[in-house]
Every structure is written in C-alpha cells, then in structure tokens.
Length: 140
Image 1 (spheres, rainbow, N blue to C red):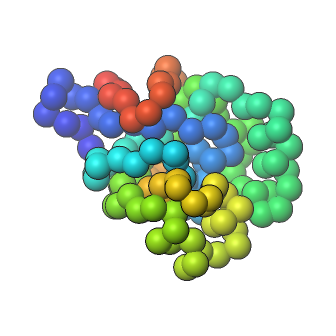
Image 2: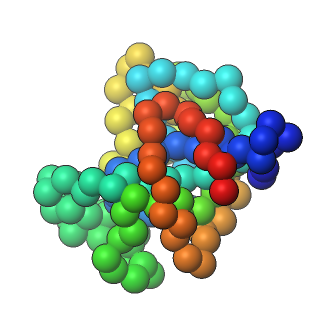
C-alpha cells in the first residue's frame, strides 16, 4: 500500500455514510464527475463533516440496512480502511448491471464516472487525518 515516494499512499476523502459503505464492501462503485487513470491501493478517508441531509439519509433504506453491522457514531476526519481501484468506466457502461442498492449509493447519471472498487479492508481503529479534494497523498 505504501508507495516508494516518501512512504505516501493514495487517498480519497468521502462523506459519511459513503466512506463506511465502501469499507464494508456494501458500495462497490464510487461515482465522480471526473475519471481517474489511477489503479491500485487507495485509503478511504471519512470527511470531518457529516451534513444533516447525509445523517438523515443514513437512517433510511437501503443505507440503514447496509450499516447495521457498524458501531455508531460513524468515524469522521479519519482514515478508516483501504480498497483497490480496479477500473474507471463511464456510468453508462455499468448502470444496467447494478443492484437497486448500488444505484441508491451513487449518482450514475450520464456523463459521470464509476470507479470500480474491490478488496475492502476496514482498519480496526480510525487514524485521524486531514482530508483533501481529488485523489491525494497521505503519509502514515
């Protein structure tokens, strides 16, 4: 997971509950307005903010059901685990094959990108860190 460049790891900040859903393996696609050429390990950082609308959404189906095995409160402002970026495709290429739950967890509108994520590994203890926009370098 650690690159040769000064021990840095690639990271992505996500708002809760999406950060936890990715690490639990409940969310396999991260949708973005931009694509990435990056493939490989990616640590997931939970944003320090948890907007009211996102908190309310996490208490409704299918979010609530997918989060049943999580200890609350959800971690904020911390690295919570890692995944592997397997591919990045236009949402139009993946939408038809997705479950209703996966569709609810992302914005699969035309013109967007689906980052295909695999191999989720939750960390036993969140590691407090400051997040950033886009893919960023995190040094443990």
